[in-house]
Image (cartoon, rainbow, N blue to C red; front, side, top):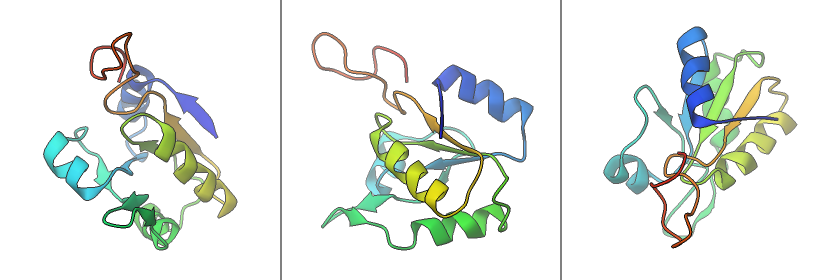
Length: 119
C-alpha cells in the first residue's frame, strides 16, 4: 500500500479522474463532520457494535467496476481505519491502493486536538 499526504491526494485525484476516493469513516462522521468533495462513502466499520463491514471489499469492487488496477484512495479521520481497509483491499487483489495519511481531520497537535495540522 502506498501512503499519500492529503495535498498530494488532492493533486493525484485531479490528475487521475478514474481514481476513486473512498471515505471509510462511519455514516455519522461522513454526514455530520463533512467529507471531501467527490468522496464515496463505504464504512470500514460502523456503530453500534463497530464491527468490520463484511461487505466492504465487495462494495469497493462494485464501485471499481471489478477493475483491480483502478487507483483507490482511502480516507478516514486519522489514517488508521483507512490503512486497515487498504490492507483488506490488497489481500483481495486490488493493486493500486493509497492510504491518505493523517486522514480528514489531521494529526493530533500538542494539545491532542485535530484540525490544526495536516488533514
